[in-house]
Image (cartoon, rainbow, N blue to C red; front, side, top):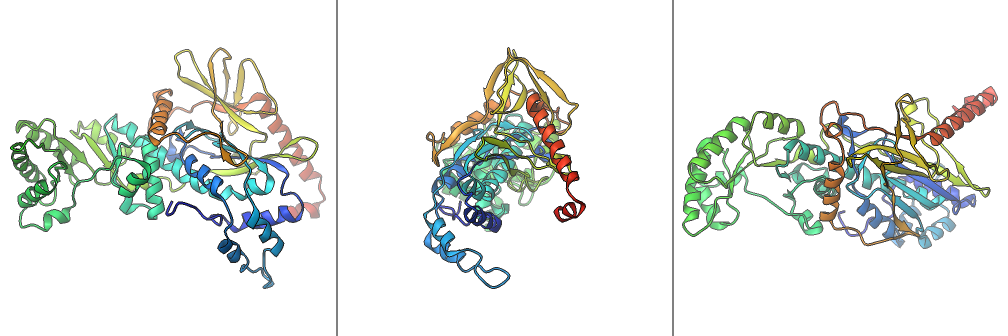
Length: 496
């Protein structure tokens, strides 16, 4: 997001070496299906909130290998000193255009482990080539949107402002985090470039350095109010917090004379519960009931929950480092796996079998159907294979814990979560506004039992494989293991 076009080389080398392999073996155009999913809900929570789709679609639509990128690939050498990439393959890349079909959960959709967030269908070479970029664009955005949703939930409706640019993982990380935080429910950002690019409201006050540049705190507040009378929110903890509140009140009285208002004060250190209560009492006693108290200082969902339990008088929460860095979990852990391939005889289900059960994938052309009960509350998600449609009540089986099962009634309202977003490499419709995405996220979260959303020990939402898909997966596992054990010992050793 540091420029308007991401390079086609935003990828790992092995995507390109595999691409040359598919091209060299005549398999580039074989139809394949890949699914992007995660194995565990982040932050020890009970859900994730999907984000990053808009950036992913932008990248797929614009993907081209420019002459300078082709020239760079031509410089790469193998272990023998010869070029890794054949000239003919580089010529192929120079003319290459993606013609993929993509079905995806809209941004702001609540999602769970093993569910495909995106399903990519198309030529094997192209569908493989975009793996790294899609994971990069969706993983971090989803992580930060989820973190923000948890923080907003902890704030109980009080506005959350994203303050994290200076601590973000570079400019791109700061911009992605600001956008994703807005998807997750943040009301505004301090990041002015994010405001310009995405239309997010921007908010900010002043730093301690402003106060320190004057002889007294009162003088600093007076000068700030004169320079920005319509942004009069004062950082009051440079010297003595409650004395700072008194100085803010004094300036607030002067602001009233020409009809201006005192916006509020910001607390950035100390006992935020006690100081906010004392500040509120002083502001109210002086007739500034409308002035808001903003708190910052390494806040996250746990701290906010604790402050609210202590009846802190905080109106606005400024959250920075622990939001934009995904504090508590450095990465989502999303993966992108081949699940079906067209071999000339029809679609063939494929899957990875691992000694770690969590890494055994789900085969098929996968979709997700969400069921809502009579109250309109989400009651369960069925991961299903579009090649084997089913009807009637749906038995779902947890892919990681098969004894966890649930029957979903066919009388409940059903919603297919994956919707077409690209066909033949072009988006199917204009993208929704970011405000609409945020509204969708809020509505999506509202349809879940509060137990799913709570920070500590959330209820495990029933999301599992439709029974026929589970049975097919088990059969393929047995077949794969039987083939492995039937192989000669020397062959097995080679494979290992």
